[in-house]
Amino acid sequence: MAKSKELFKLVITAIVVKNGCFLIAKRSEHEEKFPGRWTVPGGKLHVSDYNQVEKDTPHYWYNVLERTLKREVWEEARVRINNVRYVTSLADAPEGKDPSVVLSMMGEWTSGKPKISDELVEFAWVSLKEAKRYDLIEGICEELEQAEKLICGERTVWKRKK
Image 1 (tube, rainbow, N blue to C red):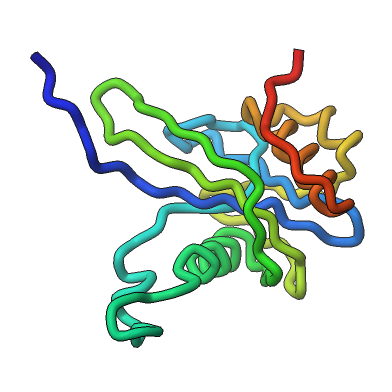
Image 2: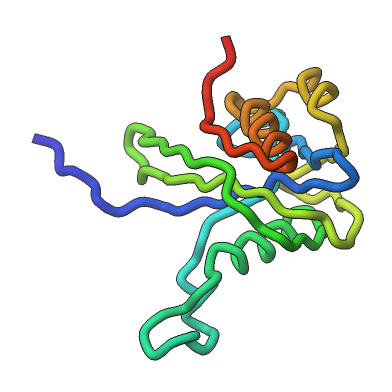
């Protein structure tokens, strides 16, 4: 019988909003997962994202996800964000690899101009309508729709488009 995995990677992604538009990025063709597809910036939570700073209380670090997301967006896109808010979550369990939980968050652009890297080779600021013309990784368009509703004060749950 296969052993059940109880540990997982925690990934956090950012729907970056600027003047009513969303920042999307094209993954390099060399990326293992979703090569050449469009996505939003983000990355993994590392223990060093919190254990190298002073605890906020005797036992805990607070705002760990927010700090991690700000770091990842800066490292991947050279953009600064604030006002980080939860949008949705998802999980995967690829055969032979550690499972992942992905938290999709939204943050407001504060400064910076997206910069091409080895991982992300192109960027675009797009409206929701324009985003639908890009080869987005499955589910991202629905996440952008959720973010747009959240901006207007409406909280929704992710649903697959038919």
